[in-house]
Amino acid sequence: EKRRQKKARQKAARLLAKQEQTKAKKHKTTPEKETGTSPANRTGKKKAKRKWDETNSDSPEEIKHSSRATGGEFGTLRLGVKYKDIQMGNGPFVQDRKKVRVNYTLRAKNKTGKIIDSGRNFAFRVGKGEVIKGWDIGLDGMRQGGVRQLIVPPKAGYGNRNVGAGSGGILFFEIQLL
Image 1 (cartoon, rainbow, N blue to C red):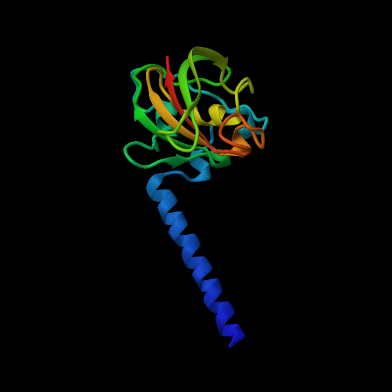
Image 2: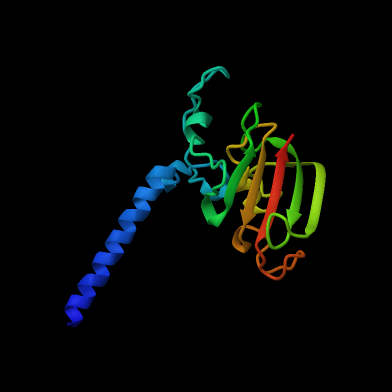
């Protein structure tokens, strides 16, 4: 009886793993597709870059970020950061170590909760650790002019510090890349 139960549990675990793989392929959010350039993802190896003109629709950024979450569903990135593009930008992609300017709103509880913080024309360098990890991870793949919602868990945000969302609270950002 115990052996039969163990086999049933193993079969259920394999089935669940297969369903998750199928779902990941369908939404193209496998770890291989999430090879961003933020400090948390670097291996110290430099990859050769090919030159691309901006009119080429198959640029490395287009290929790398072809699995954008739009509409009603959120995509998931490293450290559990979730994102959804509200408006796609038309400008250049965010580049690692380059300075960007954003307007942002931070809310508590959910995307319609109390505003904890907001900023206009806030400038920082992506991937340099000047902002929380959730931003470095969540802005990867955005284009200038785009608007994105981020749900940042404590491990990619402020940890157990209370910034208005409670100790270890989940942060809900809406970010516009200027």
